[in-house]
Image (cartoon, rainbow, N blue to C red; front, top):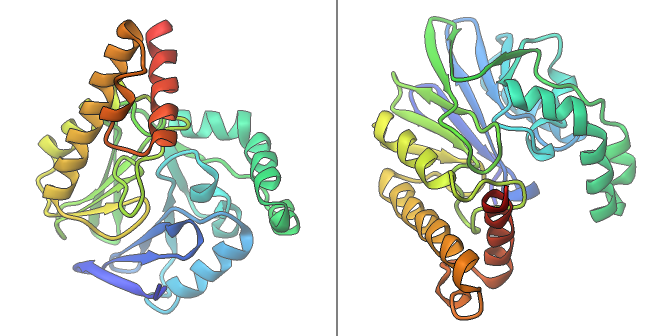
Length: 264
């Protein structure tokens, strides 16, 4: 994978990383820029900063698309800039940031030293439904359409470039991740995003940049997951598991999260 900036709209860039197949975004205005997500460690964040500086020397504002470690562990290196996120993103990082770190170290013990360097910094500017950021004369709209991949997914909309950064509400190259998800709400959240934002270019949280047709097709898969999970809650899972559009381990995780919602 070539970790170079891809310009997907006027002065709107995506950098796809080998680490977690993560996409970061860069939106450049006059004398200011916005960096979307900061990667999974200080070392990775420094690599991202070096890459940003090949495009612009302007000061930045940062946005975290949601509260999963690979999207915010690099925040500290971008301070003292404003860091924006959904209100629940800041709350979950404050409450669970150290648990996030411990979980990643347990899963990746070879990264212990790198992860122990991380200073956990939550967003210091938050919103609940919508916010508008002036990025050097360009307005970037931040939207929260509802529960989905997490409780706090943020979509960044760049209307003058025809680009939507969907975060992990849309995934490419791997199935959607359900470990912290709300499968019964996710289809409606994605549908609202697609209905309200007509832009042709959609940047997923991971994987290749996609179009609206891809996002609509994934919405249909998510809707099927929600429907089958509701049926399985009543009928039992045995005969239905084969109908899920994702591998069995992914389907089982989605079912578990959906059952949590239904039982609540």
